[in-house]
Length: 372
Image (cartoon, rainbow, N blue to C red; front, top):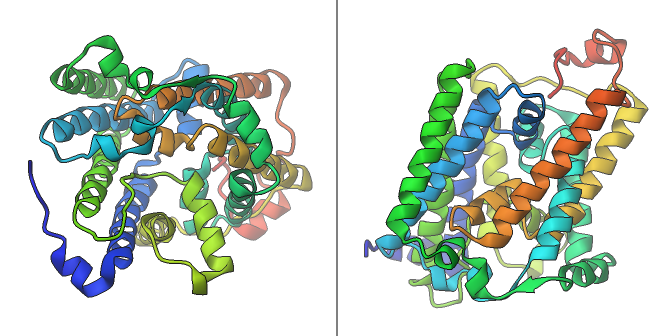
C-alpha cells in the first residue's frame, strides 16, 4: 500500500482544514479540466440521441474508462479504503437511482446542462447558470433535510439492495485486474469515437484527466481518513450534496466546520474561471426570454430533487460508478434515458423559450449564437 504523509497539512490547517484544502485542490483541477474539455453529460446524451457521437461522448467515455481502470488499480494497491465508502458499506436504493436518475436527466436537458456544467458556465460569466445552480442548491438542500425529504425517503425505500448486491464486480465474480482491463476498453472506445467522428484532439486526454481527478480524490480522502484524529469521510467529486452543504455553511458559517464538500465547489469555480479568462472565453450571458428562464429554473429544481434521490448528480454518479457501485451505474443509465427522451421530445416538437439567434438580448449580453 502506498501511503501519503498528511502530517504537514494537518499540522498547518488542522484535520477539518486539511480536508478542505484537499477538496479545494480537487475542485480546482476538476474545474479547469472540465472547462477546457467541454465536459458535459447533456451534450453527450444529445449526441447519442441524434446518432452523432463526437467530442462530448468521447470525453465521457474517456472519463469513465480512465476512472474505472485507475480506480481498480488503486484499490488493488490498497490506496482506496473501499470499506469506508458509505455506498459500499450500507444498503443502497435502486428505486432512488431509477426515479432520481430519470428526474435529473429531464432537468439536465431542460436547464441546458447538468449541475457541474452549470457551475463551469457560471465561472465563465453565464449569469443564467448562476440562477440555475442556485436553484439547484436550494432544492437539493430542501430534499436532503427540508420539506422534500419525506418524499425522497418514501421513493428511496421502495427498492433497497444490500452491500453485496451493490458491487457489480463482486456480484459478477470479476477481479480488479479484469475491471482495469474493462476501463482500458472504454478508453479505446473513446479514442475510436474521437477518430471516427471528428472529435477534438484533446477530447480523450481531457476525459481521461477527469477520470484521474475523480480517482485522485478517492485516494487522497482515503489517506486523510487513515491519518486524521476526527472521522473523515472517504469521498470524491460530486455536486449535489456539496451544493447543499455549501449553502448551509454560508447560512451559518460561524457554527459549521470546513470540509471537503464545502471547499470543492469554490475550488471548481476558481479552476473554471482561470480556464475561461486565460483562453478568452469569459463573457456575460443572460436568459433569452422569460420562457427560457422558467425552463432553466424548472430544470434546476428537477436536478436538485433528482440528484439527492439518486445519491448524486451525473458527476457524483460517475465518481461512484468507477468503483463499480451498482446503484450509481443504474443512476447514470436512468439519467441518460430521462435526458434522451426529453431531448427527443424537444427535437420532435420544438423547444420552448428559445428566441431567434441575434436577438436584442443576446446582442446586449454578447452571448454566442450556439447554446451553452
